Length: 514
Ligand SMILES: OC[C@H]1O[C@](O)(CO)[C@@H](O)[C@@H]1O
Image (cartoon, rainbow, N blue to C red; front, side):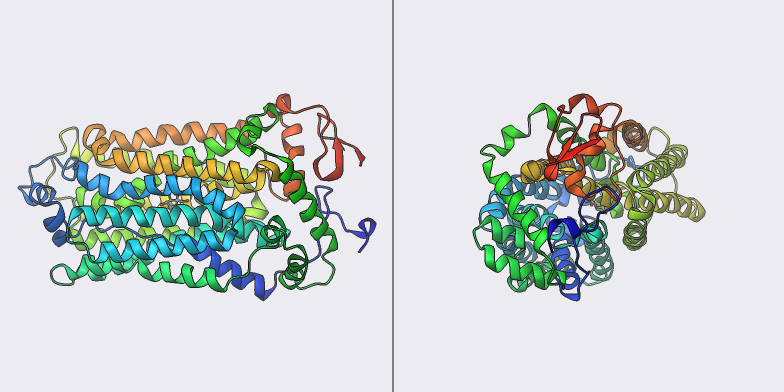
């Protein structure tokens, strides 16, 4: 179809024809499985006994031991958090692989490394094997986090990008839930079999993403980027389920030519006009982790044990929070394009804040400053779990999925891959730092740990209120308009700009089509 006949989307941009075909749905579902990651096993007794005997002894010792400090072990936290440091390093390498060799190959590397890590962990005989295995899992996650969201965004028809993108976070939450359910049952097995199955079981999601990456089609964008122009055209037709793909195809060619002109994507990112995007690429993943979610998700069993549940009950509680996490992520898939990102951020933030303060008060009253307490009454533990669930729900329909979605939709093409690497790296650095510090922080901050994260939730909610413009229903290539109209960010914008062939004034008005 010639340019003039293309219908316009609400923002004034072109609305490319194309459907949510079975083909694209299937490929996105398979690709989104790259989000499957694995839960923890640190609360299993035989595991602690074998690899962390001093932690085990301390934990098994008399109940008068400070409840906040039972699990404070450097090696144990190093084991847990080494994964994120490895993921951070590999996401930087992965950005080059993804760009020059394609998204498929990055996903394949991710799957293969993940497989190797799971096997080494499952057969581990010593702590060093555990750590090597975890580092390989981390490399796998780094490759997957770099390539899968990019893959999803490129495959998805424009109108369904939000929901399909959140598919990635949905599969992260499903991965955590499945791991927690299995851990619950594996924990009942005798001896070392339980934790071996638990760690080795990670090979299953690894195989899904490995086989998936072999059968999935490459994205048209990546094909064009690597010179396979004609193949890309027929692939795009197949994906969209319509013949009329010329407009989108030409824009992909144009975008790819433009981004090829950029020799230094990293340096480019430092230009004044990209200041809002750079700020978001750093602050959004930083804030996502400063909600304290991983303190709950990764250490839920440890946390529940600390507040007085027994081993079984603690894994059961993790299953409960895991289910809430999955269901609330579905709410986000449903509502993100209806209610908008800002509404979810502000509502979710308020909900998390209330729950964190409540949990701090409940735990503070019971354990006080010393961390000494008799057995918790049942109703008390139930109330704490309830607040934790409401907190997880608030996270799961706000910062969880939007932490990946919003950055992916605000970066203009010429800085997209570099900015995405920053997003992934910052996410991993802070996941690492928090995982590394959590047990020590719990030991020293005591119930104040929840107030620490509550403080950050206040900061991020105020930040969203003043600095994050609504991006709902705005086509990606026209996103520059939202910055130009923003009370604060407009000062960084250049006077005229030509996004997508449209000349824009500093105030965001369309001056003319060029
Ligand atoms: O669902 C919780 C999970 O989601 C993430 O924030 C990723 O978006 C992880 O860091 C966390 O474990």
